[in-house]
Length: 125
Image 1 (tube, rainbow, N blue to C red):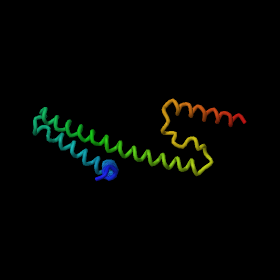
Image 2: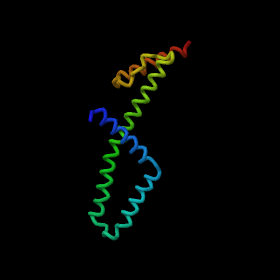
Image 3: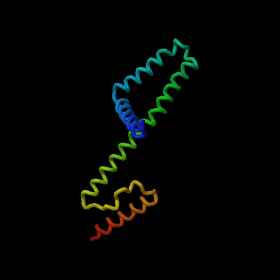
C-alpha cells in the first residue's frame, strides 16, 4: 500500500469516528457504561481494581480520540483555508492575504497592524 492510500484510509476512518462519537447515541452509550460501572461497584467492593478498570478504559479512549479528532480538525481547517483563498482570488480583495496561515506569529501581528492602519486611513477620508 502506498502512503497516500494509508493516509486516505485513516482520514476516512478518523472522519467517521469523529462523526459517530459526536452523536447523542454515543453519549448515551458512554453514560450507560459509566452507570453500569457504578452499579457494579458494590459487587466488586469498590476495589482498587474496579477503579483501575474505569481509569484505564477512559484514559485509552481519550488518548485515541485526541488523534482522531485532531486529524479531522486539521483536514477541515485545510479545506476551509483553500475555500477562503479561492474567495480572495475570485474577488478584488487583498491577494497578499492568500496563504497568510503559513506566516509566523510576528509576521501575522505585523500584517494585522498594517491592515488596521489601512482601515484607519480609509475611515479618515
